[in-house]
Image 1 (tube, helix red, strand yellow):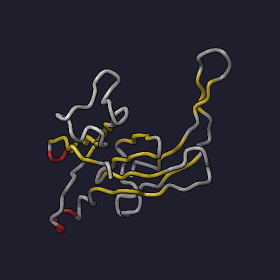
Image 2 (tube, one colour):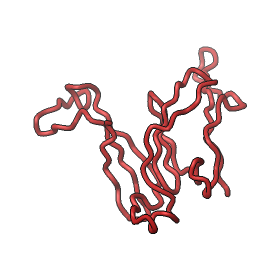
Image 3 (cartoon, helix red, strand yellow):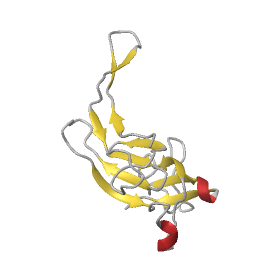
Image 4 (cartoon, one colour):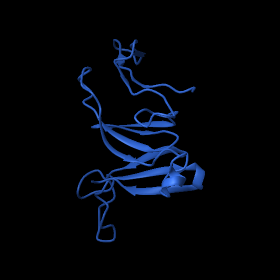
Length: 149
């Protein structure tokens, strides 16, 4: 197993110059790596930070976690999981994701605008919802998932 856990590193600016430094050791560590244990990550492909936590894409699934970024002692809480271990999915006949690799998040600016210049109109009735775009490499597709609830 070549992967590992996810680390939170603090990035600090020092002085008047635009020089950034990463403090080590890591502030926090999330999860571990095991492709046999469903409670851990299996070779994380990407991590997308959010204001309220982060979303992890590993070889088998997509997981959203709620984290309080300021408190180093607080633990992460798994909010949602989509997908199953690839070796179990054919048996369960529920193969939703097959080697997902990357995730992008869409969220409107507010309840009236998609972006600073584009207003929400009746032509876009669900524009205020949050969506995940997931590249599902094994199925050669990009999934469009409503992640509002």
